[in-house]
Amino acid sequence: MPRILAIDWDRHEVRGLLVNAGPTGISVTGAWAASLATSDAAGLSGQEIGARLAAAMGGEVSGKVTTLVAVARDHVQMKLLSLPPAPLDELPEMVRFQSEREFTALGEDSALDFISISGGADAPNQVLALALSPAGMVEAREVCQAIGVVPDRIPVRGCAAAALVSRGGAVEKGKIALVVNLQVDEADLAAEAGDTVVLLRTVRLPDPSQPEARMRALIGEIRRTMAAVRQQTIDRQVDQIVICGSQSLAEAVSALSTELEVPVRAYSVTEQGPQGLAAQGLTEESLGRFAAVLGMALVEADRRAPLVDFANVRRKVEPLKFGRVQVLAAAAAAMLLFWGGLYAWRQFAEPARQLADLQARIKDVRAQAEMYKGVTTQAEAIGHWLDTDVNWLDELDAFARRVRPEPLASKDFPVANDAVITQLTLLKPPGIKAVGGKMDIQAVAKSPAASAALEERLREGTRTVSTGGGKTDRAFPGYGWSFGLDVRVPAAGEAETDLPSEARQP
Image (cartoon, rainbow, N blue to C red; front, top):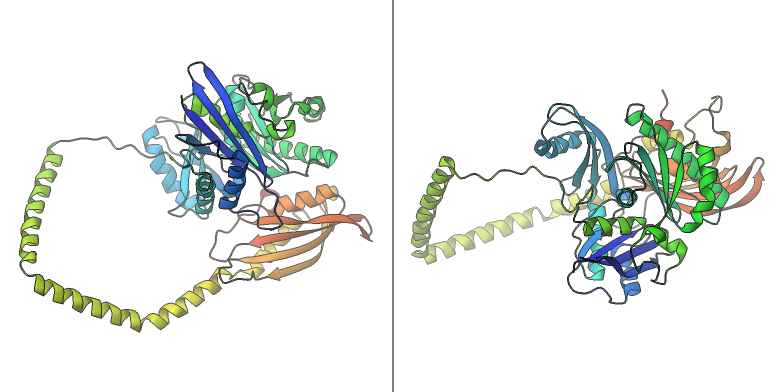
């Protein structure tokens, strides 16, 4: 009986699900959730995340198991690519070639996969290319290493939740559905048509202790995603919205449907899950965040590959042939082997000469290494300096556009989301291995929702933003909410981030 282990996490919680898939059906044998709370602003490492989950499991996972680890949007770059007509088996090479020009930082260690949206051998192809950074790959492997398993598949968390909804028959045939996977303070938004995801976003939300601000932020992000879907699919629009979570979501569905003017459906993970899920001792709120792990496990139990798998990316399959060319190559290899053996025999006949040659080479290499020792030391020092070399003029220009994407005189200026920067400190991170720079920001806003909107704009691309908390402050009339943000800025040699569309100015 195949055993499947699915793992995912966000900034606040790591989740694990173990299922058995047999001829009589699928049953849950274990479900765990562990808090990732920490005082470290940088968050936990992959090893620490895995250790928290391993402690919650208590050694219940052992033996042969197929492991799936979902990565979040933080380490994934995405680009919509338009390619000429081509057979399906030639698309991987075309996507790789085009991605090297389109992606800002696609290294040799990055895992590149794609989703084919439309096209074929007789029509132009449109694909959604996704690249997982080396840091994301290392984090996924470290989480598994701490548990004592190896990742067999590495899908994307938002796609996994969309697969669960599609498998459960919650999406009407021929329509575009927006699947919302709610987490503690963020949400995955995946627009899918049939079994294909055409758009994927992850957005930040206020925490559940602020229900009104959280609902307003969610409605705004859903509207922006719907507009992006309409633009990307040539005026096709989202026909329905499916929100994954706990049973308590049913109360908010009718209000959302009226506000968005689109049918909205609540998808209860507990009710739709297999036998034994509700009996694992987890809270209803925590089980409501199991959509991604459940989607991964059920798709694997169906013996279907995930839509995106960074552990097994799509590659061109070369047909195996053995003809005249291969025969000649084999004959040439045999001749080379023969002459190589003869040469080796001759070499063994002169062991003294070989030993002298090796000793002379070792002496030369040591002399060269000693000569360049000072140069390598200087190169390492320069490299450490370049790691923290930030183009602060360009960075401040981009920062100003993100803080206020529209001038005050604009008719479309979002007054409710206005924020005023009261203090901006530019820092070089401490430590020998520091990379990039850091911005410490103190600001005031009209409401906590405005601070969340500013935080989202500053996070675009590879920048990492962490909040320093907020409080009520009446020092600035009209701006009653004071808060702080820490922005991690990439070095000049790192990937530069494009401004968000709403921050671009002519």
